[in-house]
Length: 355
View 1 (spheres, one colour):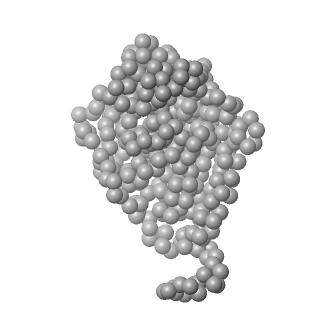
View 2 (cartoon, one colour):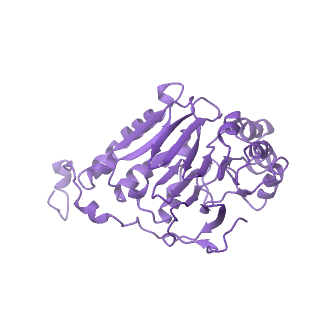
View 3 (cartoon, one colour):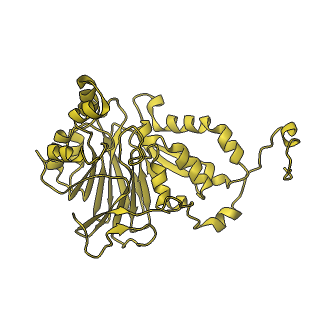
């Protein structure tokens, strides 16, 4: 399936340099709101030949797969949230604090939509997360470089299609997604003639038809069928239809969207991709769409170069440490003054370290 003869059958992190005009997309999380070992919650990483790296959503568990790619936290250019469900934003503490402890020497930059009320927006989400982790970050102050603790939030209007990022030849636009309440968005990244579109969570909408055209890779959500939700999840029919067709995109309706958008490669995520579910999902999609199609799996890697699109799986280690590139600067970076524990606690130390 769309595999370059010049590429290895597997992708091994750290062994392939991107060409100047190449894009690489890695699925960090592809599953449903429930975590399971085979599929983390939603997250996709986009690496570009100009050196930029972008993460779209960081659902719970997804950062385990990011770490496995052995990419320095410092190297990620920016993080883009589609909406604030836990399965799309739940790994914020790992992105923020984990990245800080793992060597990030710059502020964490997060882009995300507003909501119909301020409490539904990205700025409120990040601020309350930071407040909730005050004890955690206080214990790290003075031990870790001060700069890595900071977060810059770029909140934009969810309702207005617009370019929300334009740097280094990369343009990222947002447009509304139709998902339960006001607030969710989808993204379109354009760079060097390459186009990547990510739906986030959405039911089929005219917005995607309008802004999803001309994509090299279109990643669109696609839930399990109603029958699968009833049989495997134990839902009654009303609940299954509500989740699978009202809150999310059903496979047959996704096929209609893909046929109208006509991407070079369509990638579907947000379903449990099992040996006994995948064929039915694909069959439903194929009722309307006959183009190139992949059902996403965690650590699936897609390389886009010229007219060639290669799809492989990454082979990773379960025992990686954070990438050490840049740690010389990490060691010498400015620290703030360390907070002190109560003297009666310090007096109980068996091996005092000169606090």
